[in-house]
Image (cartoon, rainbow, N blue to C red; front, side, top):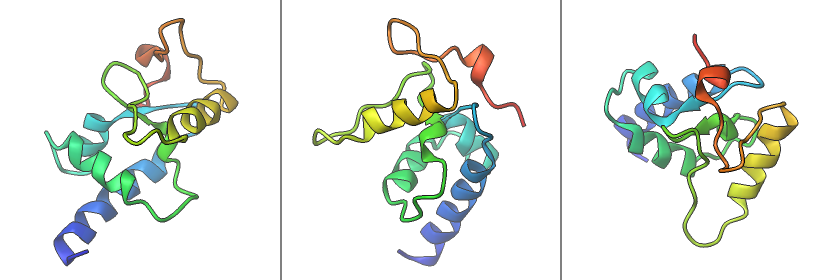
Length: 106
């Protein structure tokens, strides 16, 4: 990873680390808070490359309040939902989180 990517990912990881238990942030929200407006996909790339299992990656969801499905049939989707539910985050019948209730507002 080059220095620019490392710096960008470091900013993203710092924002993700600050999301409190029982709250979620969207990819776009994390990008904005990391100083990367409009780069929600970059947040996804950073989380995909994450090597630190202690970072609360599971608290980042898409703009619809849904878990973004991973390619390749990963168990990550199920793990993410279980971790959020363990933090008392509730999903509706369509698998969405009420962002008005659970969105992190730093």
